[in-house]
Length: 207
Image (cartoon, rainbow, N blue to C red; front, side, top):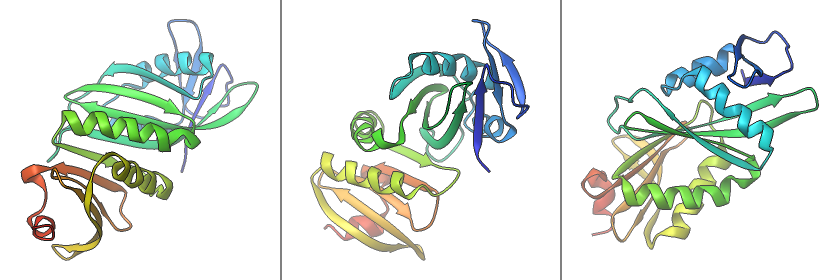
């Protein structure tokens, strides 16, 4: 399964969306389902996508209203790969959707730029929020390790390692100002937590 979209290049891959500028965007069913999971309208996504394709830069961001996510942490960052096809080329991009309180920031990014992008992103989000859930439809190992490396560059780390939390094995790192990143091994989720949201088993390791 992969997420595909075509722009003014009809291939019969899925639903067609006519944008306000007169472009025809096709989204395959997997992509439509993925967008609905994070509460983003396919129609509005297609509108923003056109600007990204037109500008053809390494990164492009736009903002949309979205459905508020009900979860233990309502701040959700979703990352997935997308293949964008036009009459001239097919290229792979990362889609990064941040849904906070029903507002979505969507960034299309060349995959090789994620390492530097994630550093700036984590720095901003860690200052604003006490928690963040990073989710992926598949286990993108490069995203996982780049995220941890960015976190370590930003904060004064006092613990980093593999730990057992409630019978599950996690890769974890925690800073001296009580900010932590947790990844359950072989899962598709990373959790950022801070202060009293950090598991007590992890806090005991630094006291």
